[in-house]
Image 1 (cartoon, one colour):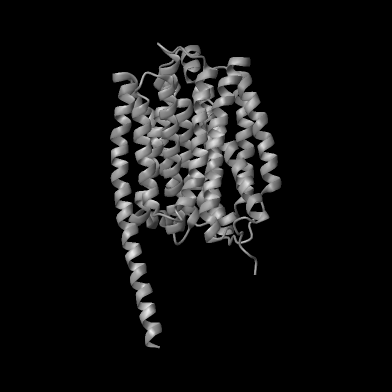
Image 2 (image 1 turned 90 degrees about the horizontal axis):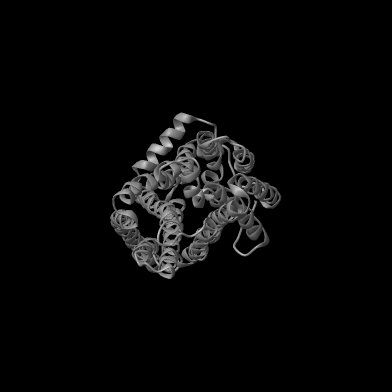
Length: 414
């Protein structure tokens, strides 16, 4: 019998590193243009909302495409799909460097979103199949930490490379880095040993989605993931306009350095997996939401140091809660795990794509203060869903105690 991957072993670190590198590639490419939004606004004479489409439309296409890759990977496997989609992402990044205008850039970014969905739709399912239950939460935490490093690095590369050689050259650099990551991923990731192919049946896949959506235990996690990302992406998009405008007037490279606050997410996503062993996962989600509220409020201070500290808290809280919610889905989905994960990520990325649009009206109405007001309204709703998740987890614990008590009574009777 083929053994599952246990925590701390060589296969564990090899597979975890491979998935983290792949995660780096995907999320660096998603967020690479984020610090460039004011540059696009000035060069192409766009409004902030239109300029932000270069990020939000990519995330929107990614979200919709997740519905395809989950069932497809359940039928034909995991690694090959991840490789092909990341190869296409790499090629498109290089092509964007040669676009003649913003419309063409948007078309390529929309197409890129379709391929960017390949890894997020499949990676957690791969982990769920190949890793032991004890290693699963830690592996997911490490994988998500790759998200944060990728998101951070993409923004830094975008900011500094644009100030150095312009945004066209910056996309060429990002394409080269993506190619190196792709080669490393292909070499490191072990092949699937526990994958059992299922016949590609779209009717059955639709039924699986429907059954997952009827499961209230999963629905709360889906809602939480989407609403948290809604706030996170929106705040990070409009913070670039705040800092490049008066009274700060910071250059693109310096603004991109504020994305170093993502490093807090690298730590918190891993800590969340470990914390879930000691406290309920719903508590982990609640802790993350509270930290996001505190971080958002801190950015209202006029000091750059307080804005940086606020973004640090927001990043820490966001990834702490996101890691817990993602693990919740993997733990509670009893069938078609890739489809269940795809629905979580669909909600997650749909939230991210809509956040910039929704908070853009708050920004137009009241500037950065309006963005924070809109964020707090959404976080309040997210907290209510976390409370519902806590109630479910409490009932599960009570049932487990009853079962354990009955087993103990049966042993004593025998």
